[in-house]
Length: 439
Image (cartoon, rainbow, N blue to C red; front, side, top):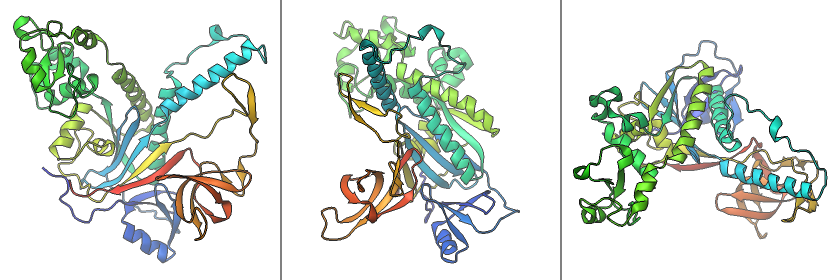
């Protein structure tokens, strides 16, 4: 079954009325007419939203579902009309978890250097700290905050009635104990997708023996069944066809790879961290009061493969859960790429690698009406080195010579007089992806 049967499906435009009540998104053509007739104005650039100049007291809402596929580095987001299968909005949020870890490490080194130099020394407070219930490491909390922020924003811009979330990458209980819900469950349609998704994650989508990638991989027993091996996930790995045939009835150790058995017995730490985020997200989404549907990564992959979609974060999101429509209309959907950038830092004194101060920041954040992080369009006239139109995130300077980070790279030395603000800094950087064609 293919998911591109409908013609003319375009990314929708969010609409709110004069009382900030979210309405059903409209087509871009309808939005242009409303703007041309001055019946509406631009409310937000990213995601593009218009606000009507009148209220709509008797607005009728459709069953719109917000779908989430939380990930370690990127989270897929989609809004789907359950009745028709139209994808009204799609986005991919890139998190800054690794940047948070790096910033904390830099701060730790600065504080340690300051203590060693007996400058502004502060007694350790390790034994006075208590972690609140539900505490998460800052890098995981950052990812969680990004998702919750966008859930709240989209609910203000669109009348969402249901939420679907991928809760686990795979059903680990069913993998380790097939009898937990009956043999029929383990032997069902989704069983192979759950197990294969787990093994692909654990072994990095490569052969466990020769480490080759980009070739078909087979599920292989580390200890063969004829030698007493079981079908539990801890006794399974991935191997290419050549290695699988060469290994035959040998164990992994006899084949010359004892490390495979050791790695198979180790827990999947990355998946455990992601599952922690997803459970915390599920608990906090319950505060919205909306019905929440959960699914596994195996179910998501099953839905995506059944509809012939390629592997992307936002397509995974729109395929989350058992409520996925038989036909999803994704043709010409334009994806919004969202990069979490944060709101800067509070460090006023920069230091070198030895911890000594080398520069001081000004307390003023706004110059010539701009601040770092604003999305701007710079129209530089011909004859200058940076001539052309540049759209991106601006880096300001008190001299008025700004840098702009675009999708093609960084452009330096642009005068502030050529810049126009498109979107004020809100902790994220935006870029529109290409429209999706037929798959």
